[in-house]
Length: 222
Image (cartoon, rainbow, N blue to C red):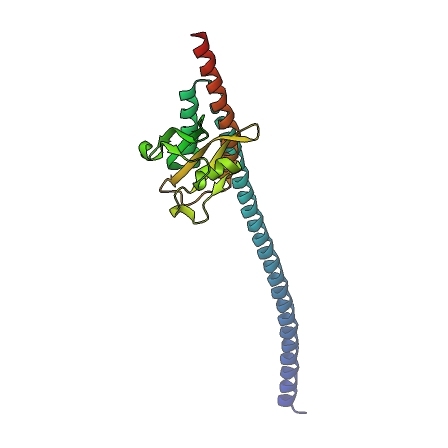
């Protein structure tokens, strides 16, 4: 083997060694890339799970805040109804609850009269003359008093009225609240409204009855 052949043989062996080294290095780099990719995917999954947990926590916090606000409103409304025995103040408290908490711009409050018919006690946003008296056994308002149960119009916000709430005392209805229209920014009644309906049904009825007794006592004293 002449010197040139020896040189070529050595060069080939060197190149094969470099190729083998490069192959090993490529395998090592491929393994590192795979490891990094797995770590990235794991980190990404943890980030996604963390973001989901944060969103769930935020949603839960909003629910708790909403529930606390609802309970506060109910508590304040109950106190407002029983803060006085004066009839006009009780009617004003009912009006404020219906306007500010339920969000109605048209409603009327009725009481059962001596003849069994419904007499208008107060109203807001409606013509009092048109609702001065209501038969106690006809229509949504009368039927609400007869049945003693809250009535919600199936037709939705275009109905007239859209809801009727009985004012109960000792298991019987002594009046009713008829809601004819909600405020423009409120498209429908919700769960909080139903809780307020229940409070009005029991507490407003009791407050009105108590104010009537107080008026009778004051009249007797006079």
